[in-house]
Length: 214
Image (cartoon, rainbow, N blue to C red; front, side):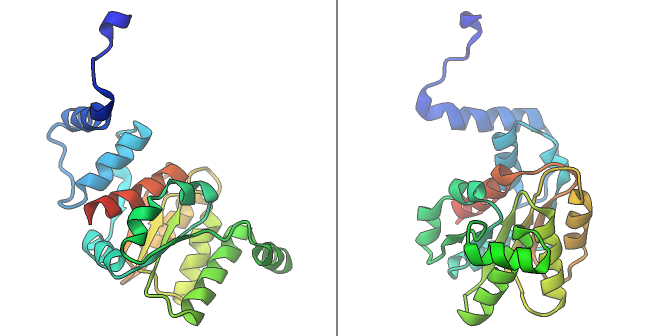
């Protein structure tokens, strides 16, 4: 078995991984400009279905890169996604990563209103957007479909206009439906992992893909 191992220097492992991904994708046609995102999702998950299930709104990459260059911050629905995002790279452009899931006021609001903490987090982000006059917010959702549903409601209520929604919650209950809601939004850039697949790691790696493209 040992003699079957491919000899790759530690510094070249990621490079070799992306070479293998390109080889296995073959002549698969990807939307121009989205290739780095698709390939990094495959690299993160070893799941080639992301070549088919990632949905991109028109000009989303260009719009997202512009928002990041102008100091947009990223709001996540899990501490895991927050931990996985390259905060040093984001800070170079004036942005930061925020996650409110552990905040006491979020827990109280969720209990009072009978919602999930994830939904309450979206309310807090919307309030922050309005009060602090943030340059822009990107939402990276990798766990909670209720966060996507609440974002959809806040947008339609005119309380929030995200620079980008990354919709990648994973699971079975309301996951597919919440993603489909985001796909109906007009004039809101989105990258959605259609279907049941996703996760905090996928949400984070999409953010990182964009940051590495700057």
